[in-house]
Length: 269
Length: 263
Image 1 (cartoon, rainbow over the protein chains, first blue to last red):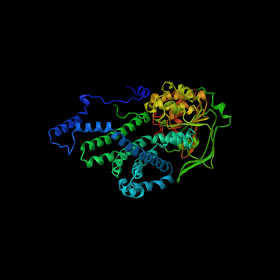
Image 2: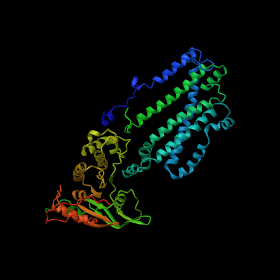
Image 3: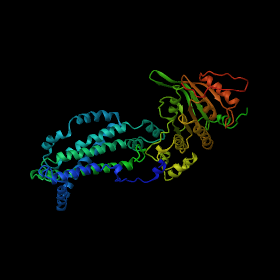
Image 4: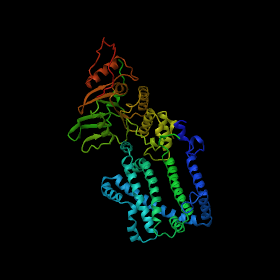
């Protein structure tokens, strides 16, 4: 396929093909079968780990009862709100630091100091400040997701080809137009890398934050399951966490395919 | 030798579009341009030759308004456009949007299409710049410059990265566009043959000053005949390149060193 025709075609999402030559699905399926076999023969007691079939049953029950969807929504809201705050703050800080020397002098040292403190270590402090409601959980996610966005967008802005900015200037683009038409599109690939990383961080912090005395959410579900030694429900929640991660990744990939269609494909699929 | 009556004579009477007097440019302790004077008439095609580091690009950047020249006597037209050596197309904008960069109005696409038509690329309006060849990129870059109807077109070694055949085709294209739109042109190059093939007047920049000037009165298209070679020899001499093989007989030339001045 020539590049010119590829550029005219609308973007299409390719589904993974099921074939033996490209059988990346084979080993996970084998592992599942072994796991089921282990459970059926009693090698893996349900107290340690529930069988895949039991997990599917639990997933079905929790879904039907509405317990899983309602708790999932709570968790999703926490992650989304925290991530949104983190992304907006990180973007704003990166713009301030990236677009001016004075901004960098003001913002960058603070961000570097912040970076040295693991976000999760702030948990006790946030509990003292905000109690044990939604506020400390969301704040924790927001604080943790600021940095990946900031760092990537900042380096993206600074990495924009100055010759392109100069060309835009020579064609009479105002400083604002230079930012919106040259600098920001040029920094977009880096921003999306930061966004993908931030989504992963948001999920990670969500898991920990939800252990803080949650009365709803996936963490609450896991805590209850732990108390009753329901390994099947715990695995269901782990599955849902994994699904959330996959979904987040898929969203960013889709955005990338659309927003970065101009980039020559390094590896043709 | 026939003399072209077309441009140089007619245009020199008019008020110059570019007027530089006593221009000096320093980087730290290094004086790049020193007390330089330059006039370019409307519609005149001027080539600026010089070795690397002779200050050619510095002069072009000043005329393009990319480097400020506070307190200096530099007059240029308001409408200027630059074609850079590297095409500098924005990779995230489709070709026609690159051409229409910074332009406003409902008909910008139509205008961009017309401009791209002039460089023979109206079939590639909607492709991404990354899919263009080097020659195509430079043609888009030319279209982007000409759509602004510049009074001064600045060409910064625009053909240096192209292969020889593409370069020749670009020469023809530039000449035809120049005839049609009649901007004043300043072509910065280190290729003596290119300068002679295109320009009304060739300037040699050396040690920060215009060291020599040759008015090329040959009719276009210019063949590499004896008159061409005579000008070439003089210019190479100004550039400090010795004639490796002297003229064997009067007017009949056997072989010449490369026209490229690489330093």
